Image (cartoon, rainbow, N blue to C red):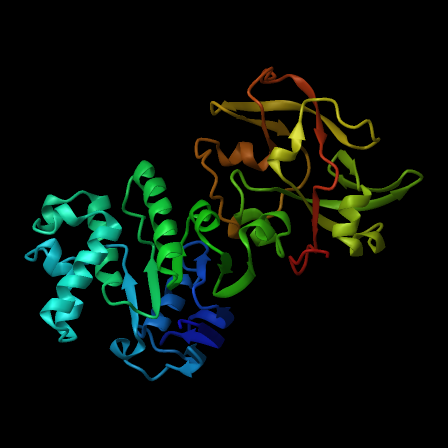
Length: 391
C-alpha cells in the first residue's frame, strides 16, 4: 500500500514566508500524481515534507493512514529521485544502485537479485560496471531511478527528474517513466514546472500557485474546465487568451463584449457556466482557446466571429500561430506564467494581440484584415475579483 494524504498542511519558514498554505490532497495507492506550477509555488516544498526533508509547520501528512510528521526520512519507506541524480562518482552503477540496500543490511544474494531486476527493467544491465562520468544524462537518470526501485518503497517521490536533459531526451524519458510506473504500480508523487510533462504523465494533476492548491483534476478536466483563471492561463500551449469583458443582453440573447469585439454566448457555453446568465451588464473575464479559432466559415450562427487584423504569423510546421490585434484589456498576467513554446513573441505583441492556432494552409499576411470564427461551446468565463470559474 502507498496511500498519501496532505491534511491542512502548512509550511512556514523562519522569516514568516508561507510556502504551502492549507494543502489538502489524497493520493490513492498506485496513483501517479503530478504537482505542477511555476517556481516558488510550493510544489517541491510539499514533496520534501512527504520525504521528511522539511518540517511540517501545521497539519499532518499521512502514509497509509499513519501520521508521519515526526518520522525520520528512513522510517517513511519512501524513495526520492532528485533533479541532480545525486550519484556517487567513485562507485560503479551497480554499487550506486545497491547502496541503499547495503545501508539496510540486505543480504548479498538479495541485493544482487534486486539490482539485476531493476537494471533489466530500466535496460541498463550492460552499464553496471561503468562509472557515472562514463554515462550520458539519460543513463544517469535511469541509474538514479534504479537506486529508488531496488528499495521497493511504498512511495516514489520525483523532484524535477528530467529538467537537466535536452528536449528530445526529456520526451523519451517521459514515456519510460510513465511505462515504468504503470508496470510497478507504485504510488508516485512527481514535481515539475513543465505543464506538458504534467499533462502527459499524471493520472491527476495538482496545479499550485503561491503555496495554494488551485485545482486537482485529471489532465482532461484541467484543460476542458479550468477552475480558476490561473489554471486557464497556465495549462495549454499557447495558453488561453484571457481578457476583461462585459456581458450584454440584446434581442439575440447574451453576448460578451471585449474591447470593440463581441461574441455570442451560445447555449453550450452557458450550460457549462450557468451563472453567466445572471451577469448581464457586469464585468467578467472571458477565455478563448487558441485552437478553437479558425479562418474557415463557421456554422452560420450570428455572433460567432470577430473581424480584426493580423499582427504576426509564426509557422511551426504542422500548425501555425497567428496573432491578431485586439483592443480588449488583457488580464494582468504578471502572476500567470506563460509556458508556451513561442518564446520569440515580444510582450508588446502579446499585450495587444490574441493568438489563434490554425492549419498552416492558406495563412493570411501580416497586416491583412481577417474574420476569425470561434467554436460553439468553447467560451470560458471567470469572476474578475476571485478568479474562480463562473460554473
